[in-house]
Amino acid sequence: MECTVSWTGAAGTRSGMGFVAETGSGHVLAMDGAPDPVHPENGGQNLAPRPMETVLAGTGGCTAYDVVLILKRGRHDVSGCCVKLTSERAATDPKVFTRIHMHFRVTGRNLAAVAVERAIALSKEKYCSASIMLGKTAEISTSFEVAVD
Image (cartoon, rainbow, N blue to C red; front, side, top):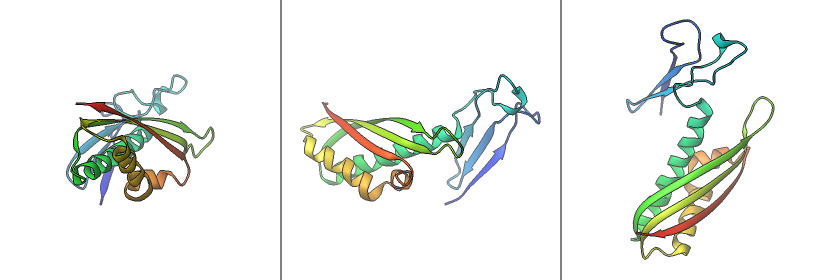
């Protein structure tokens, strides 16, 4: 896996904190920093997600992918999966994630809560590379609800 991240600055200037990532699979992802009112040249323009937001989003995508795949392989009639991630970060540099909570809302027909709970546990403990990696610095918790399709 590879990725190239390039500084774009602010609209072609040598200031700002905009970046574009081109993934090995050929996709492009924009990132930007938060505006800095004290030193505007060092801040972003709030035009895209922050880099750490993309880490959190990627973790959500990784675990949701696992949950859906595990349920489908178990021949469960799953039609939707949404995971809301909330996090806390360390107050000082490096501002690693210290807590992440993932709340899943899984939709389907005749979905047993025990099957959803098992899929989430398997993702968290065995399959999701992102959450397992982040679990080295963050306490990761989960909750879920099952909705009828």
